[in-house]
Each structure stands twice: as structure tokens, then as C-alpha cells.
Amino acid sequence: MAFAYKYPRPALTADCVVFGLDDENLKVLLIQRDNEPFAGQWALPGGFAQVGEPLEKTAMRELEEETNLKNVFLEQLYTFSDPNRDPREHVVTVAYFALVNLAEHKVHASTDARRAAWFDIDNIPPLAFDHKKILSVAYDRLQGKIRHQPIGFELLPPRFTLRQLQRMYEKILNRKLDKQNFRKKMLKMGILDELDEIETDVAHRAARLYRFNDYKYRNRVKKGFIFEM
Amino acid sequence: MAFAYKYPRPALTADCVVFGLDDENLKVLLIQRDNEPFAGQWALPGGFAQVGEPLEKTAMRELEEETNLKNVFLEQLYTFSDPNRDPREHVVTVAYFALVNLAEHKVHASTDARRAAWFDIDNIPPLAFDHKKILSVAYDRLQGKIRHQPIGFELLPPRFTLRQLQRMYEKILNRKLDKQNFRKKMLKMGILDELDEIETDVAHRAARLYRFNDYKYRNRVKKGFIFEM
DNA sequence: ACAAAAGTGTTTGTTGTACACCCATGC
DNA sequence: GCATGGGTGTACAACAAACACTTTTGT
Image (cartoon, rainbow over all chains, first blue to last red; front, side):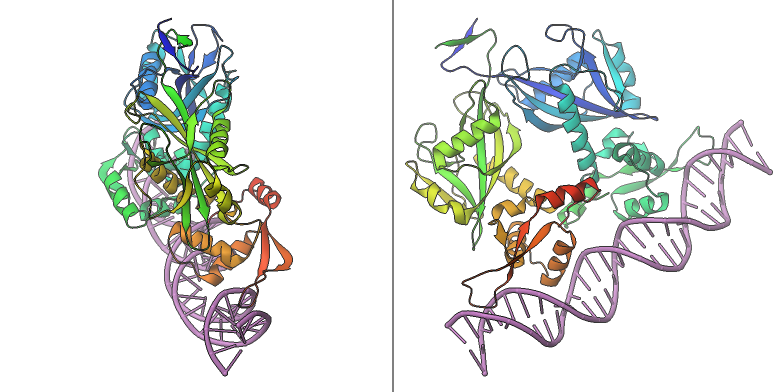
């Protein structure tokens, strides 16, 4: 017991809700806990804050340690401070949500020493602590945010077809979109680069590839543009 | 020094950005600090978390202690964890933003033992810590959120005229709105109750009073309605 | 009578929505 | 040649934006 304070302090952790998209479904990355409490149960990756370390760093560090993921899009979600959320003591957690292109990260996550695995968003096992609640807040946020900010591109490879993009929105928003209307709207925003490339290895006519252009996006935002899907 | 832990912990605080609206302007509630660091400087109301207390409670408790405000609309804003934001040590703060009807709360805030005062949003004095940054995040959030959720009503008295409502949007979004179009859109949403009352003590034709109906709003949301201003 | 704001009508251009069709490619 | 998806055209309804006008009330 080496660190003493005049007044008691809640403990502080950072947890990550990592979303990934493959050809089938929206998925979430979970790890299986080594230690008590909830040993053996599935949980969100995360861990204790270190003094002197910003919490985004904590989140990223724990994510890499536990699942080998790094350099992912990470954004603060919400801070959960219910005194009873951890049976040991009062632990406040700052939750982050991350978006990754699952195709490029699939392998890493499952070959780590600790067990980590992707679960379909609508087939989540029982989770430790209040992680089910956190996940639900994250999913709500994702559904809302994806409509007002161009963050969905983080779930796709850098170069993608309009169909992939549409599918991404359909999977997350959970409803069908009209092809023509989607394309018209998307292209009209002027934030995509049309590439001189088409997809390969498909059993039908190959589609043109596009790339999200953040520079164009920021420029349009400066002029009052509001992304809306 | 009574409380000891195996590993060091950042300290934890809650701060409040309280917005109020009067006839003139959007304002923010600030307090003048008693103690070092930044003694005498203006700052956001807030204070240290207590173990066993959810942080919303911390925020509300500190707000009441320092400014006499209570029963206000309070929502979590963001958690700031830069290790250098407090010169003493690593202090993580969870910021909240609050909306109050300034007309009903004006007196309380300025008669408390500690100095507390309302400042115009575009005339803010230098602030302690990173509070300027926090305020700016809060203002951005307010401008964004007010367009997608009916929280603006918290800034008005329970019964209000359409003109008051329009003025509120104009003050916060910082641009003029067309009267007729505003009314059409607002009333069409079907989330206001038209009252059998009109305003009094005005030097012109008295306008009808309305009331926000949260029940109607929630019902419409269930059916897929999205508030958008 | 006038000032001030309430409250209503209408027109025009832009978007959203719903379909329908032809085109290119691999099997 | 057929299945699969790429890519485009269009028509109608709904909405946003701009503006003008009439009505009511206190001074």
C-alpha cells in the first residue's frame, strides 16, 4: 500500500467498445476475463488508468495489450460512475468506442494470448460488470452519430464501392436504403474521390472504387455543410 | 493521510457548464475561486467526487453548494483527462452541462456567499484550468444538440410564446429564422400543447402560450419521428 | 393613428421517395 | 443466356425558403 491520499478516491478505468463490420454483420470485440471478479466471463477490453496518462491513451494501450489492435479510430463515449457497477469498490469508467475495418484486423484479435473474439451485435453473450449497458449506449451512439458525421468510413477499407458503403449504413441503421437515392445523395455531398479503379474478383460487373476525402469534407463543413445520411 | 491504495490514482472531479437565457443573450454561470490554484479567478462550478456518489450527484451537489441552483436539467458533456490540466496533480474531470430558465434563477445565483455571476457567452473572462476549453466544447454541444433534441425548452419558462421559442433558437444558433417557416415547422411536429392563455403585460398584441409536451414527443419518437430544427 | 408584433397565405425551387429500366460481367 | 449487381432516368409528393400581407392590441 504505497499511495496515500487525504480523501478517498474512486478508482478509474477506461473501457473500449470496438465495432467491426464484415460481409455479414456488425460485430463487437470482446475479451474473456482472466481474473476475478467475473473470471471467465466475456467483457469489454479495458483497464485501470495510470497517473499522468490521458484516458484515450489508457484505452488504446489496454486495447493493444488485450487484443493487439492499434491505430484505430477511437472516440470518447460516456463516463459511467454508478458506485455499484463494480462489486469490489467504486470504480468510475470512461468508455470509448472504436471503429475498425474488420477484414484487416480479424486475425490479430483472435491469435493473442488472451481470448478475444468478435460477436454479432445481436448475439452478445452475458457480459461482466455493466458492460451490457455500456455496449447499448455505444450502439445507440453509433446509430445516431453515423447519420451526422462521416465516421462510417472507418469501418470500411480505404477504397470501397458505393454498394459496400450502402451496406454499411443498412447494417448499422438496420433498414433498407434505395440504391439510386443513396448514390445521388452520397455523391452530391462531394466528399468522395472517384478512383480510376474497379473492384476485382467479383462474380458480376465490377464496381468503381471510391475513397473518402477528409480534406474535402472539412472544407465543406467550413462553408456550413452538414453531413446527413 | 488516511486513504492508501496499492497503485496511484488520478483525482476525480465534476464540473458544470450552466447555460441560461434571458431577454438579451445566452449566458453562462461562473464562480470566483476562493482557493489556490487560480484563487480569485473565474471558473466553472464543480468539485471533487466522493466515493460512493455517482458523478451526476457530485455535479448537482457542487452546483447547489456553490450557486444555490438545484433541480436543473443536467447532462454529461465530456471527460477531460489531460494530466496537465491541473497544476497540482493529475485530475480527471467529468464535465456536465446544464440548462436553466434564467428568469427564474437569476436571484439565487448572485446572492450566495460565494461570488457567482452570469456572463454573456461572447464576453467570458479568463477562466481557471482548462475551463475555457470545456466551455467551448459545451457550447458546441449545445448548438448541435439543440437542433436534434427538444432540450431548448429547458431554457424557457414552462409556458412560452412561439416568438420566445424562436428567439431562443436564434440566440443559440446565432442566425435569423423566418417567422412563418419556424412556426409551421414547429407546430407540425405535434409536440407542443396550445394553451388557452395569452401572454400579459406586453405593449402589443398578446401572443398565445404553448407548452412542451414530453409525452407527445416520446410517442412520436417511438413511431420513428426525429426532432430536427 | 401608430408602433409592434401576432398570425396567415402563397409561390418557387429543392429534396426525398419510389420505381423502372438498361448495361456489364462471370459462370 | 442467366443471375447478379452496376449504373441511370424520371415523376410525384413533400418540404424549405422567401416574401407579403392582414389583424390585434397598448400607448
